[in-house]
Length: 552
Ligand SMILES: Nc1ncnc2c1ncn2[C@@H]1O[C@H](COP(=O)(O)OP(=O)(O)OP(=O)(O)O)[C@@H](O)[C@H]1O
Ligand SMILES: [Mg+2]
Image (cartoon, rainbow, N blue to C red):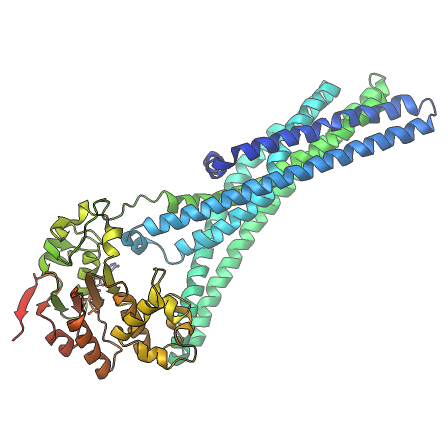
């Protein structure tokens, strides 16, 4: 619970001034009710005994005006808190994006499927709701409760003591049921992550499932997940309801206690009916705001669980592989020196030396699983070797500003992912480039032929991850993206898988004739592609050092 409070405080870090204003408004909102209580007492103790009906009307009207005033201040207060919370959510989501772009590949590899997506989308959405709805009610209610408590104590200390008798019980309830609800909320989150991951996977694999005819089995699995999620949701909702109702009952009990104790005092003559009723009016308001405070607790606790999960992403103890700051011109010279690397304890690459001189075209070949894509990932600086060093123009990656260096790379990964949008947007991928540059890159990659066949040309939409294009068309656009900006180093991981013979020939000619002569590292199973390189490096078992096979 304390951790949740700290996390919320941190979340609202930039909103202190707005929250302070909200507290002031809450105090004003309660103070306006003090004269109202005194006026109620006046009705019963002065106006009624004197049969002063005009007095009753005017006093009643004055009470009404005060209530309306208090409500208006409450409205202004709500507005202030909504602004503060929405700002906080914007800051949180922006921070999350920043962090997600910083976190290294290795961290993503280690995450449960659906977990990160769940935190970024569902957890922040849940927090947004909890904070907007609960906190915008909760915080003012805390202040109003405190202020009304003081007011009640001024009006009648003894009855206030009776009222305060419920506090220990409410605290105990919150401690106990709060912990229970938190546990069930975590369980529910786990189920929701699984569901969320399955939706993503299920949608991606939809065509495959239809083709394999395994829809029934898939459906059975998906249904089991949905049922487990709803079972977990039921367990959580039941505990939340029990908590809310228990709190309401305790609060109502306090109201009854006040009536009984106060009623006995009135019959004993030590209290006027007006004093009792005015105290009861304040007590009713007080109990309502106490109920609001404690009623918001379950949502705050489940929201706290979401906040902690978001915090785990923000505070992830994962360093980027390299954190240097040096920027170099970069001529395209990359070297792996005595590099050893494994995704886990098992070594995959052992003592590998690989040299790529400026302007040189090197083909990396070897059986499936040998570690070729892993070598490209090491060249891109996505992972850090366990030993050995990677250098660009003789400077160790450790010293370099890798983002700056990578801007000089052109890359086609084995798993090609194109940005949703138009062909031109996919080729640009967020970079500045004129239409002329886009066209030139497309021509070099043989993607101009793809564009020519599309009704809208460069403005044609390519669908989610290029789903409206053929495999080869996607690959050509991926190549165009890699060649845009005339990179000093081009890394292509099996760029020819989907290409027809003509396209492969075109690609090889292009790579040989690029006017700025970049270095090229091409991973390939295609013998023509390998033969056209200046040098072929064979990677075997992912363990042996590379052997260089001179091309005749
Ligand atoms: N992110 C990862 N986490 C853990 N293991 C991985 C990861 N990526 C690859 N591997 C493992 O590392 C080994 C080498 O994979 P890699 O993708 O480098 O092979 P490859 O030579 O490119 O194979 P292919 O010709 O099939 O593309 C494989 O056994 C693979 O299971
Ligand atoms: Mg590979």
